[in-house]
Image 1 (cartoon, helix red, strand yellow):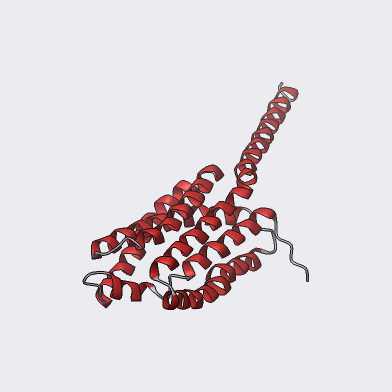
Image 2 (image 1 turned 135 degrees about the vertical axis):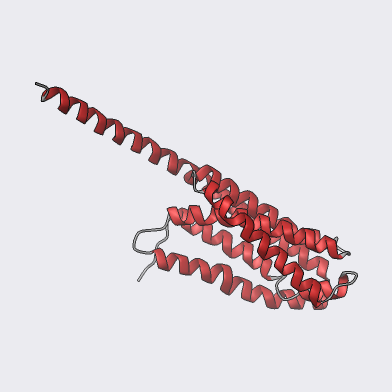
Length: 221
C-alpha cells in the first residue's frame, strides 16, 4: 500500500526527524560531560538537572497548550520559536563550567520544549489525514524517537571519543536549527488554513441566519 502524506504532516515529520537527530548526538554523552567538565559534577547533579528539565516542561505544558489551541498562528509561533530556542541550548552547554549553569540551561530547555511541543501537537493534530491518524503518529514516533536519534546516539559517542564535547554540541545545535527552519516551508499553509476555515464558518453562519430570517418572514401571519 502506497502511503501519501499531506504536505504539512510531511514537513512536520521531516522537522522532527532532523531536530531530534541533532539532540540524539547529546543523549549518550550528557552525563559524561557533567561528570568530566563541570566543577563538582556528580550523578546527583545529573539527576537534578534531568528533574529540572522535566518539571519545568510539565509546569509550562498545559498553559502553553491552552494558548496554542486558540489559533494556528499562535501554535506555529510556539512550534517554530520553541524549537529554535531549544536548538541553541547545546551551544550553551559548551560554555558551562559550574553546576548552576547546567541547572539554568535545563530550566530553559524544559520551557522551550513545552513551547515547541504545545504548538507542534496542535498543528499536527489538526492536519492529520482522515483514516491515517495512527499511522502518521506512528511515523513521527519512529522519526523523532527511533531511527534518527538511535543512529545519532552512536555517532555522538564516537565524535566525543575522537573530537570533543564542544564539537558535538555545535553539531547538535546546527542540525536542530535546520530542523526548526524546515517548518517555514509550510508556514503559509498552516497560518492560512485556519483563516480560510474561519471565513467558511462565517459564511455558513450567515447563510443559516439568512435562511431563518427569510423563513420567519415568509410564514409570518
